[in-house]
Length: 405
Image (cartoon, rainbow, N blue to C red; front, side, top):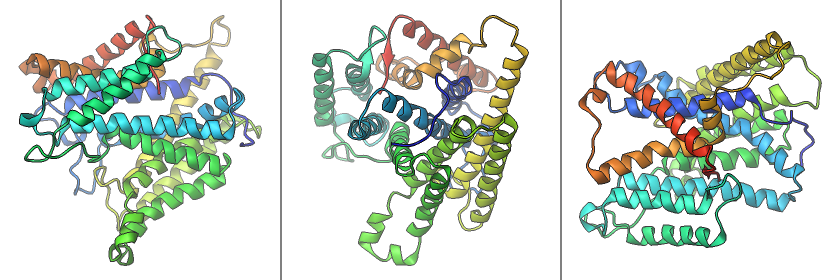
């Protein structure tokens, strides 16, 4: 389907980037509860033309999703998937993430507690049980048997039927803002479609990236705003920008790992720096009209974030190349630290673990000690909590527990 040959096997730099991004995401989610933190450790308000490093964590996850797309699609094609099977797999993965995201966001907001037949924390826990029944494994191999998967579908349907929303309890589940996993699902779908339609060509992906940003701009034209059907057509501006971040990741993966043309590491680094500079320049050009805002998913925020991700990954790749050269005389190849390896291989399991813990604590009426809400102990607790999650994921993954979509 696409005439590109990518480096085979696991890519350590991508695994490390993925694991670190997930762990930082868990950390900053815990910091959200800590009082009196400086602005650079918090999300910037929606209408402030600025971004902190925290505002780059979600884009980094979208970016690494995009980096993984070329390898995942190539692997399935090599395994014998037909184009139809590949497209169905992509749709299944993306929409599965959207489904979990919708359930998660409805557990956070929009429910009418008095009308719910069970505590919202129990409802949330059961949704995670349904997800595991559908996509989990207890022995490290294939998903659970068909009966368990059917039970997962039935449990999702039952929970949706039992849900009560709206101020008077007469409403049902809504998409709201899709949730983090839902946004990742839509970005994954857009990134995969772009990659396949462009046949893995960097030029085509650059065009797709530009079209994602142009879509955001067109949505704000008076002509579009004055027409109901045009507003509907251009209503997915945030998803388009998120998809652009995934496409940026795919471009970066091709820059570093496309073996179709022989290039030295210096040449690949030069192309990466050029790409990062182009992203930053475009962000600066768009910023006067579209201020930096993670909440509004503006192009300037996304492009600056993508530029930062390209530079971070380039530095990581350069460090690993140096490490491999200096370790050339050793018998064993460099490996990821155990905790990072476990999170890299099970990012969804790691991401969902704190939400399961939170739901359990709500159900049992437990709260974290007061010191976790104050700096500096709260900051250290957030970091230690992420490490604890990584250790837990390593422990259960070593015993065959998986959650893969």
